Image 1 (cartoon, rainbow, N blue to C red):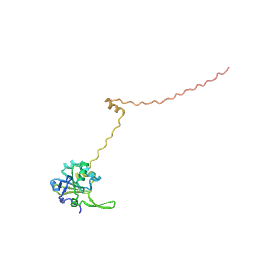
Image 2 (cartoon, one colour):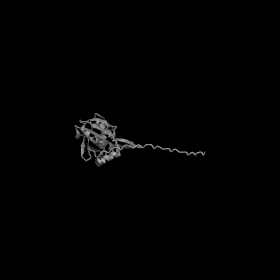
Image 3 (spheres, rainbow, N blue to C red):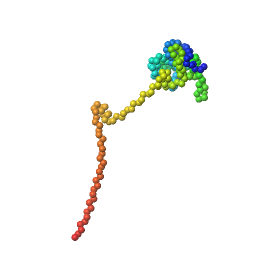
Image 4 (cartoon, rainbow, N blue to C red):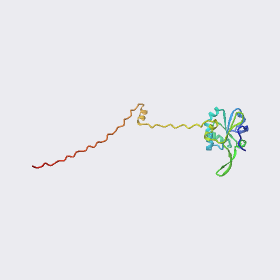
Amino acid sequence: MSLLKPGLKAPDFSVADHTGKAIKLSDFKGKKVVLYFYPKDMTPGCTAQACSLRDNYKDLIAKGFVVLGISSDDVKSHQKFIAKEKLPFTLLADTERKLHEAYGTWVEKSMYGRKYMGTARVTYVINESGVIEEVIEKVDTKNHAAQILKTEPKAAPAKKETATKTPEKKASIATGKKVAKKKPTTKKPAVKTVKKKTVKTAKKKK
């Protein structure tokens, strides 16, 4: 089955979350839902994606979004993932892959010439009426929250340059008093004195 298109009604579901509680899409009627499918807990790409959503979670909540992550991992795996990365949102355990099939995210993949079935990394943004508003297929794992919020990725804080402390600064910090800077002493070039040789002349005998 192919991916669902924007404008379609999002299929309702009932899937266990990381606590074992059954979660339905209809539970979030009147709210915007980020339903993001990812391949596997605790893998590099999936961790980067989850951490992007975690680090920008307050902004997502402020915009009215509910975040639901979903993979074919079981409840215990989700619990470990949440504990390790301190994820503040719900993860759904679609172990039977019924929800994957309904949303067209259980697909054939290939790696090193080997074909297998797995989860497509796709995010559905569902509006307050339960209609698919956007489908994000090209997921930027490190900046996924920015893709949803339509904002520029947050730049990493610039490193501050640390000035090297001079002996005078170190002394002033230790004593609490200002220490006068020592003026550099310039050595005068040594002047070589050349001794004049005195030549004695013998007196002529008369």
